[in-house]
Image (cartoon, rainbow, N blue to C red; front, side):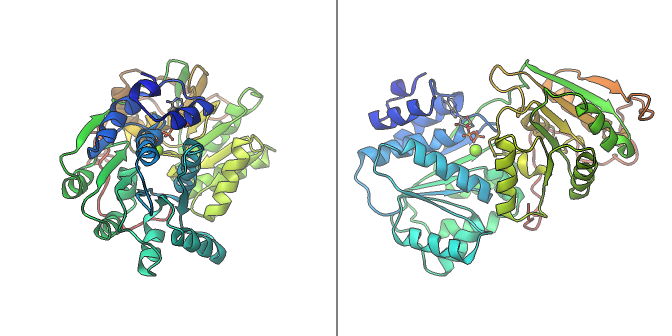
Length: 410
Ligand code: ADP
Ligand code: MG
């Protein structure tokens, strides 16, 4: 379906065509008409399916055709990076309509606080904010929410996972009761259902099935003990100039540092990204990677969701992701569109059972490769629940990892 068929305002169509969008994605096709009708909505679709445009385009359409003054739209997102990314997208979509927007996030200098405060004072039409910083501004009396008509919770599962449940509830309490509420997420944990039940009215629900990694992606798994992983990564990228952009995902900060140290010791342009870095530094690392000044980034899970990076040639999972769906999200960073890519997962003996769960989810067997002899001996493929993994949460099809964990800094 085209955006014209959906019935969006001409000025928005023009902006969309400048951005090179030709057809609506599936989530956009399903969600936009319902949002235009004014219905509350819960939408589940994996990363990269175009959720931002799915909520922003119909809301911008409404703002373009209805009179508006004052802040009508509040988008709440989990991280600063997403706030910035979404606000930039809004500026693109809203290029030909008189709509203003501002991003509110933490981690910046005192100067930024002042810029944000002034922006709020000007009653921008759209606020894109992280929960913590927004609450600070609410507490300081900097925001005026009496004109809010649209509330969007983006990456809702991630926000709950990060412990923002109470903050979100508090923010919602400060909003007018009559409004349209939209929830977007990659998964649907039970805590999210609860939040939806309390705050949405008769929501339209749309779920887009998780799509399997595209056929252009070559997937493989190395069976390897932890002690050999860093060396294996070096081996994998050695003499492979075709891999221009490489992401290594790792579950711990420590292994991020290990891999960065090992690869930079070999002369590669490599940077790590973890909670050790300030938000601003993380953005700079990402920008250097996007502009190909940095060849390899090594990241903790911060990067796995939400952030839009295209054209990765090689994804390496240093550990098997805890959530089978995370595997699909990560591997989805390579081989987008018609491009081809390679995704390699390093699997130790304890992780084999988790890896077998992933194979079940994607409905395919991924070839297992033994270590080259000069590195060492591989553990044998034997995916059974050992003592150490016994009792670990089996994969149940949806991530449901909200356990009331404290807010974690990512
Ligand atoms: P999600 O929130 O689902 O992870 P995004 O909204 O960040 O996805 O979109 C992912 C990428 O796809 C962005 O680069 C966006 O510009 C692009 N995109 C979104 N919708 C379309 C479309 N209809 N046609 C082409 N590209 C699109
Ligand atoms: Mg998104």
